[in-house]
Image (cartoon, rainbow, N blue to C red; front, side, top):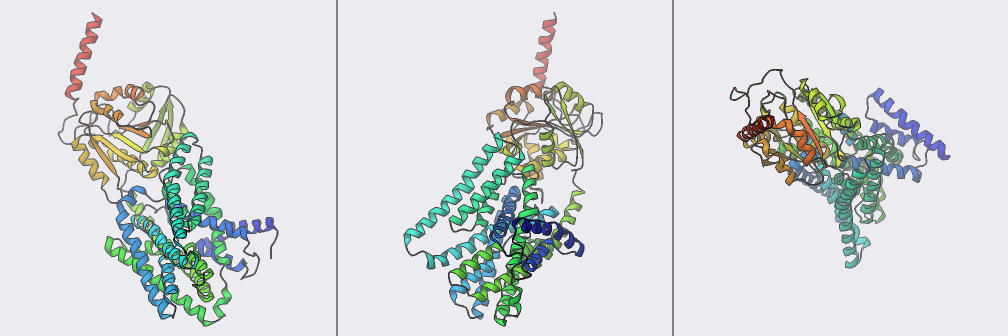
Length: 616
């Protein structure tokens, strides 16, 4: 057995390096490989490692990482659209296995208290296979969002049953119960209200990725500790922390890249090794009681979670592969089951046979869930790739700033907008920037970052009349939608009634949902009405156009002065759609080029008269 700390660390890091490489060769999920290696090197296997406290502690951080990632990577817009489905699925995913568990537990001869807690254990699940979903890039799929949203409810219900049953053994008076409720309320207020407020102010002052990473990690650990303090279990606290910080940590941001790198390459493998080290293979021939209980538990869990996924598929009209994804995500079990089983065993509700059977169940279910999730994620990724071929997200974009070199912010904007091809530039003034834009046909963005983009609360988008008739308007809308999805910002469109109808249709597209509100703006002269509705954390987005294009308005020439005078203290972004030709582009409905408004004609006439008077 290795006892030297440096030797232990070296051995563990070697496992983390080699196991994924071997698993890729033999084509099994690396999750399964880490658990098997944990079994081999643990105290019940070859005894290379003794399951020391340090490994178990680091492994617990890995579980918290998984729950934090799940909370952060929930697509807020899609989740709001799917929240009813998520709640319904959460009920399915808890009640169906819970009732089935009650029945099978009673058939095994257990009492009502034991059977109830076992039912809660079946209802709970751990998003252990979520890293597979993230790796394939299908975390924004509706089925994934429904499964993750439902997980919050199932975990809460399972731990609530545990708390109620445990209170009969631990708490003996109403004062203790009142104190427990006070702890829960305190935890929820700190994690869901205070932490986002603190994080936003931190990110506005310190925008470097390393500091942001440390803030998120600190808040995750405090959230987990508060949840333990409130008898809610740390995994629920970490998940709530991820949900609370969702908008402030975009999925493609440098902070999230650090979270994924450290978690997926260090803490999550340590957690899986720790799970494997808990499994005692000798239990398989120690007697039939443990094996029979384990088989019944495995069958109950699989049937219960599959039944819940099948009900969800029929209720929400999902595809078969989406049902498989939900089943794969929700039948893996680890942290929640370990918490319930351990506490149940310590309080005398569970016997040693149930404890041992639960550990065997964890091995089998983690293995099967890995294969199911891997297959479903691969199929969904192929479908998504086919859909993306029809999306205009591969345009070549010109991103630029005016007055100073801000290439880091430009690149971050392009990555959050999921632009595949982009060139970065910095111009000394607006005249040079407009010269570059007007001399090329490429889609272009002029960006002024006044604060970190992940601290933006709302995107106030000014859309001119006939913008929907621009050749590349769908790409401009796509950037706004993807940017809103990444940073969790609300979108408010300022436009006329006809264009508003087009935007509403775009926002309701299946798989491209965007939560937006609308304000009436008949003509571009009214664009300053946005200044009256702005708050400090809003960003202005203007969709402009080049001359002789459908939506061009002569007032666009005055946008630089307008931004400098009224919006200089805010972040803003001016988008110019790709121009189809260098000639005049006709209005697609009327066949005529767009004319300036009557108000602008009057202003132009007065301006010409004043200039002619001055020349006399």
